[in-house]
Length: 350
Image (cartoon, rainbow, N blue to C red; front, top):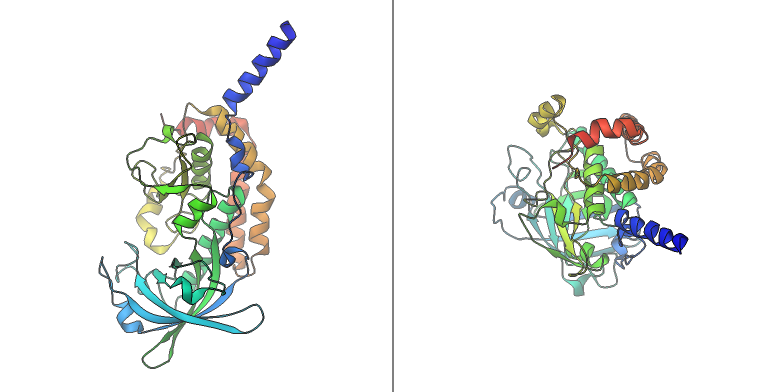
């Protein structure tokens, strides 16, 4: 009888330390999704045609909608094309003094794209290069794309992305305006549906009310990429997914271009804060057992993160070295319980 009670006690402690649902970090309970656009990691080649003068000068908060055409090369070597509507988007990067080429929203009709690579899509965010004719900004796009891919490797509770090489043509004269890197971001609605839930807007929520495993993973991931530019409480660069009343909310991070790992030129002030030692791990102090669990998960996925950098044929050698060195620092930290206590636990959120 004593042995049985002792066994029950062990099981109870295990449940308390590793709550039901913690395995979801590993992606075992999530639908894989059925959008062909994100079924491959190959770079796609896109042509976008529109009145670029009107589009690039439309920087109002409630901007207009600009008709255009999108064309891409299929895997069989043919071309598909369909009409789209383009809008400028964003906040900081929408301002012309910050970026001469803003991020874009691409709208399309589901009937027009049925049977194409874009089947099931009707609105997609396009992450662009910020400044034209500057190679630096092309490389920054690749780095942010790889950061999203790292996040995908750690958890399916993340936005899928598709890398693209994009040629922008001025519809008025038909001239090629520029050719640059970019990537397409999965729609929030589709990301949430893939996780078996729906997006919710609960500003002001405390991290303790979220899935502790997913919040801790997000906090560790943001620490990996040297990013302070996020906050769950005000939903800054974080979306929340609800899977129903029986499940805690899942936080999902996005918009990583202000991270120290990317080190974009417009991040100068934030860089000074980072150099002053103000980068903090924003995990929860009272969840040390969860932290060790998530650290173990990250260490299990370690080689996959390195492999993503090694196998990316579009990153420069210098950027590959920088990203690999950051992985070295991060995993060296996670491998030392003493360093975890000294650096991470000491700076956690009360």
